[in-house]
Length: 111
Image 1 (cartoon, one colour):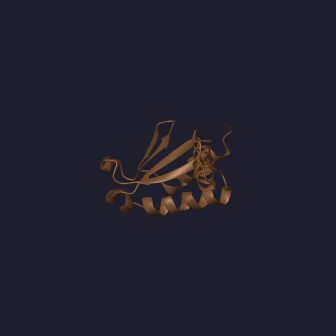
Image 2 (cartoon, helix red, strand yellow):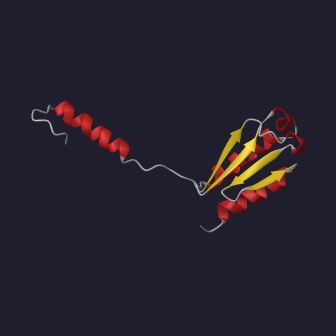
Image 3 (cartoon, helix red, strand yellow):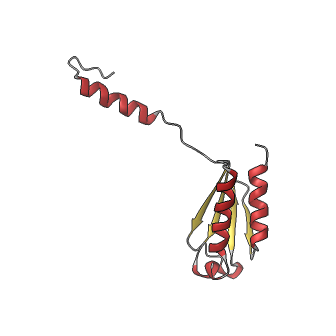
């Protein structure tokens, strides 16, 4: 409680809300997959791949892997491009099967 001599019930309630907010646990995934959806990558099937990976992760109900779509990663010569972090592995000119296989491996991998 704040060090206030005269504290109303509303002050107590507000303080409890703030305290609760800052004690919340933040979800941090073990792995993050970054998929470039720049114009060149999108033309080569990155958007469909993103949808399939999201569907795969939704079906597995895991929180170990998060997929984030990005704008152009400036590697257009190798389109489509994606990155697996924290492993710092990059897939360039990939096929959807490769992406699904790698993502499934991350989902089933023991931490």
